Amino acid sequence: MRKIGSGRAGVVLVVSALVPGVSCRREDPKIRELTVKAAQADEAAQELRQAWKAQLGRLPLIARFQPRRPGPYAIPFTAEQIRYLQARVNAERDVSRRALILEALAKDKEIRDLGERLVRMKSDLPAPDVVRIHQTHYGLAMRFLRSRGVADDRARDLIRRANILDRLAPGFEVYHFLEDGVYATWVAQGGAPYSPAEFNRMAVLGEIAEARAHSGRLDLALGALLAQKRSLELEVSELRIEREAFLEDRAALQGEETAHVASLNSLHYLVGERHKLERAGVVSLPFLGRSRAGPNWQSDLFDQHLDLRRATAIQIQARDMGLERIGSVDVVPGSYLRDVHYRVDYSPDRRTVTVELVNAGRFRNDNVVFAVAE
Image (tube, rainbow, N blue to C red):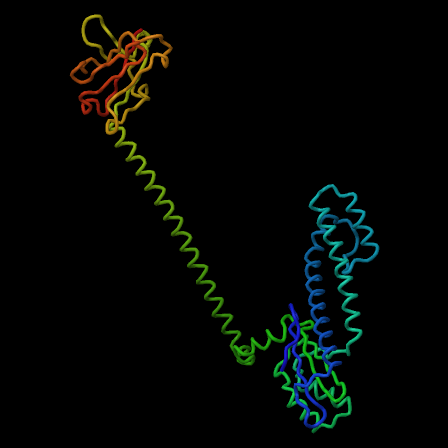
């Protein structure tokens, strides 16, 4: 048995001799030419079938754009429909719709060209037997040889030597060639949903009769498995959602914990001009006595933070406060003592002040005001 063909066409050629002593592999040039044409015709038929399928999927979309157009579309389009669609291309403003109509017209031309090409190819070939249900390759070959006047004994001998296919699917096309004493039969996919090679591979995996007998039970088992699979997928999806929620909660808690720990280990401070802070009631700076919190001292005012685990100094710039120079810096509350708890260093031009926290632990999680005077 010899396979001939390319692309989607699954083709099988089996050759036998009508004269004694001739090898079953002998190929007559005429038969070889016909089988090549048959292979090409079958491939063209499959291309035409695919083009029809693509066009069928496109027609509802075209009809949806023009619901008032009477009558269904034909494949190929009628001359009237072609004129109508060409007019729609010129009138259509929607780019996507215009492209769809142009694509449908192009596919229509392709279908016509493929159809004409297929007709030309098949005109050089004998009409094939289109396999119907329960028909066999052996029976079709015997019928052909009998029609050519070959005796039954000789026909059976030729069929036996030709290795006729055991199984045929409905829709397969079986060609028979008889030239100069050489018999050949060729099986093409035709209108079947799969090629002869694919069909025979399916048969190798198990007897068709056994598959039919078990198909009901297999369908039930498959349905149960699919239901179980959907249930498991749902459970997995719910677990994933729960896991993501847990991870988000954990990340939020970790973030809160980190922020809380940072707050506990930080100095929360406010830098401002002395007279403005006093006028706002944030601090009270008496001429005699220690500075202290004013009546409007509130925690939300202290929006600057110094993580004492990483730094123990605060730098104050005169330009940040709109001042030419810094004359003095008071630390409020006055319970913090200069040169005991902190140290103040002025730059020579008095434009920068650095407050070094000598006893940083004393300032942990506390609110402090740095009142600057020019």
